[in-house]
Length: 78
Image 1 (cartoon, rainbow, N blue to C red):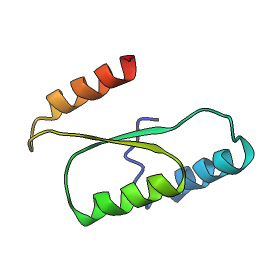
Image 2 (tube, rainbow, N blue to C red; image 1 turned 90 degrees about the vertical axis):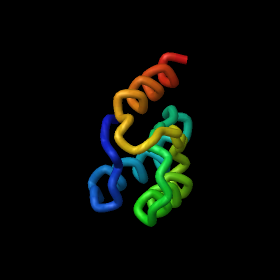
Image 3 (cartoon, helix red, strand yellow; image 1 turned 180 degrees about the horizontal axis):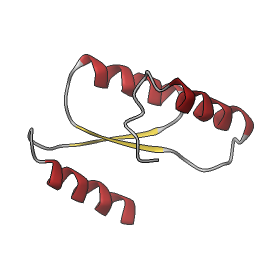
């Protein structure tokens, strides 16, 4: 999807909810996030669980975004 799926993006969450209700075997949605422990990420994780989104934390140090994206791309290739 290529979005952070921020809780304020209600239109995307509405579409995800429609997919969950109407297309039970319609494939999975994956969400990759850097491993950071702040309240925003905790809320996002909770929403992901509610909508059966496959949530993965990628362990990186702050500022290592190239490593983060490379890791996510490798994960998707598998």
